[in-house]
Length: 292
Image (tube, rainbow, N blue to C red; front, side, top):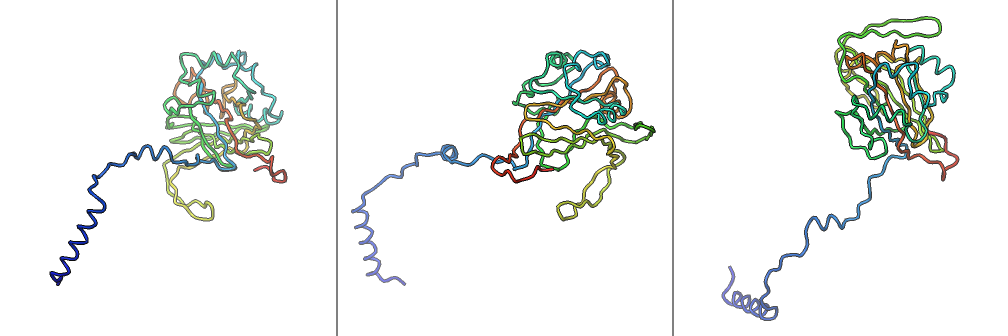
């Protein structure tokens, strides 16, 4: 219990303290959370060393325009692929060309057509992501598989005919959807090797264990038919683009991926992929090997 004398001493000390300091009003701090956040110097997010950024757009054209006498294909380099590679993808109804730099006027005219929802600004580096319009900016890591979905809907039944130099094989799938598996491999000189492999995802989803990075993951996915015999590989530099479509034969994988993927056989789809950026550079590490 505090004695009266002790209480008196405490009151005297408080009185002296108030007399020395005086009465001061409480002042509101002259700062805001927004100002402090603005002043904070946080480093910008860093891309991974092996990161690759691609812009992807789908162009819709009339079937008669994407024919053997089309006006835009002569402006596109199809010789970047070897003779054997061109023959192999052509046998399966696919055409692939390289565009160095700006898009040719003949292709820009198609992009500006009524059937298209392609954002031209997206193709110059300022992409505003719009999934409905199917313009996308995608980021990849070296050797890691990504997916480019070619058909917006799942087909109840789908028959694919594949060909090589000797034989043709037909396969039928239920609940099928066409996709490209894509892998990127940055090179030391700033270029990127792009690998595309056609896939058919089909059937009902099922759960299965997948090995990844030394661990087992439970993943739900559908069965996948992968056409490893029909790879599309290209080596491109930043600013260059790849253009893929069905060829004039209108058959095989090309027909399924680019012609009848949205129930409208009067319209062909072109897949345009532009290399925007790659992080990998061996300028200061010349002894390092490409990320193959």
